[in-house]
Image (cartoon, rainbow, N blue to C red):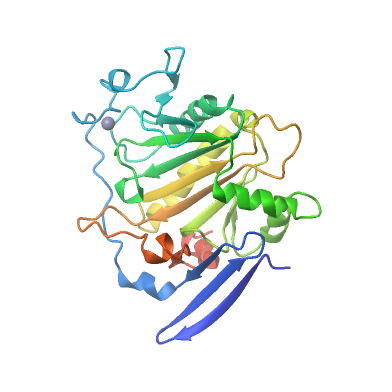
Length: 310
Ligand SMILES: [Zn+2]
């Protein structure tokens, strides 16, 4: 039983694949030939500038340029510092600065795990839908270069989360995620992971989308998993780099906090590769993504294992 439909059309030099995920109606089109244009040539940012005198997140300024929580404190865990977003777009919106350094060449599992803990701590008492996100590099939407997570929580789920809650509600067992794991396990898109099940999403919402299904549902269960997740995220970042992509977006969704019992949501993490920073401000989000709301990607999910040498 496939969880998505595929229609292929042949155009000169190429095959375009249209895919739709049955459970959510999400669709995308995949055009591997576009990947041969060689547009994504931008480089990684330099990693040597320890302090940027204009950066509010650099360590000598972070506690004066940001405000603590209502108790007057910041959440600190390892190198990470978490505080309320001064310019929120969610009922609870926090920022977690991951590293002391303004930019690092690579992230350690511990840096990521500590930052995930800080972000989750800032969201866990909010009675709603929490999620943790990361825009890495300006071409992925980061307004500040200094690596930082954003935690958001609202009474209503974000659109993507809502689609899967509805999908689970329509599933006989009430758990759509179980079906996804059954379908993807051992298949051509199954990547790796023991505790967390990682696979290339067959109907990607962005370039080289990799999803991890976590063996938990609520954010208060997350703390025992951050070590594995930090390690796996570091692995996916290096995998993207081996493909030539430095910028990415990440999201981790949880079920509603304070729901007694199971609401159909399994915690999951998604990562998508983004175009590298480039001098012409060329974007990889254009009319298809922003107006038609149907992403165009260049990598077949079935090719990600091969490309990664897995
Ligand atoms: Zn900085």
